[in-house]
Length: 184
Image 1 (tube, helix red, strand yellow):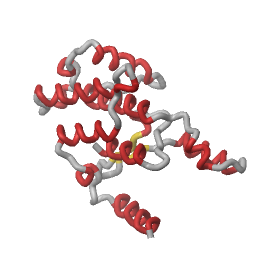
Image 2: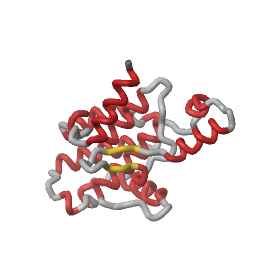
Image 3: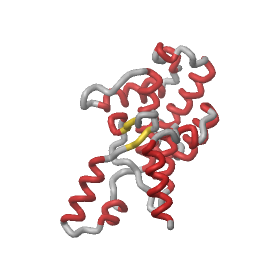
């Protein structure tokens, strides 16, 4: 849920920001399991643009990233989480292709759910499968927005933004201090 809320926030910014190459290896967890998304390639490009005298905002506005691509990638990350499968070293396309094909044929996730997730009920598995299937839809225009994905996941998990961002983390409090300083 933390990843979903983060992506929704990024996509709602004006101008919106989409991650250029979203994959599970760019997601980090704090000591209290709050999800953080990184994009070092964007940071490197921004530093290079600043050093070359280019406008950093132009770089952000001309980014090749797209929100619909982020939704697809998020669906693949959900598939990884549910199945317990990780992308092969340096070759995420194989898992992405397998996941998309698997779901495109209407197969249920119940056959590939990670056995460690034995608390998931059949109905929950079908709900997760529907979300993932919508995210990896082959027609990008039929993919939901991150706001729609987050809303649906909130229905399934009953976890709001506060539950996805543990407040025990010193990092959370530092981010709140920075945010309140920036807005004043």
